[in-house]
Amino acid sequence: MLVHRRLDAAAVEKELFELISRHAVGAAARTSGSLDSRRKQEVYLEARRPVVALQRELEREAEKLATLDKRDDRLGPGAVSAEWRSCRGRCDELRKDLRAAQQNAAASIFATLNDESLGMGSDAGESEGLCIDLHGLHVAEA
Image (cartoon, rainbow, N blue to C red):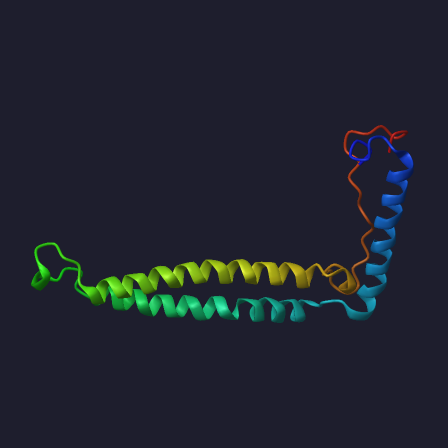
C-alpha cells in the first residue's frame, strides 16, 4: 500500500481508515441484513437457473445430433446432411450461450454474496476481525 501510494503515509492512513470504516459499516449490517446459509443457497439457485435450463436444452440437442446421420449420399460422396449441420450449429450456439450464462451467474452470485451492505456475505453472528495484509513491511513501516 505504501509503495502504491508512493510512500505517502497520509494517503495510506486515509485509505486504511476508509477500509476500516467500510468494515465497520459491514459489521453493523451483518446483524441486521446478513445472508444466512439458506438465503445464500437461494441466491445460488436463482442465478444458476438459466444455466441449468441451457444445459438441459444442450443435452437434448446433443442426443438428437447423435441420432442423425451425418452424411447425405444423395448430395454426393462425403456430403454432410443439412439437418445434421443445422443441429450441430444449434449445439454450438447453445454451448456459447451456456458459457455466457455461467459467467453471468458467477458474476451475479459474487456481487450478491459480496455486497458490502450485507456484511460482505458473511453469516450472521460471525465476528472475525478485519485482516490487512502488510506482508513485507516492518512494524514501523506498517
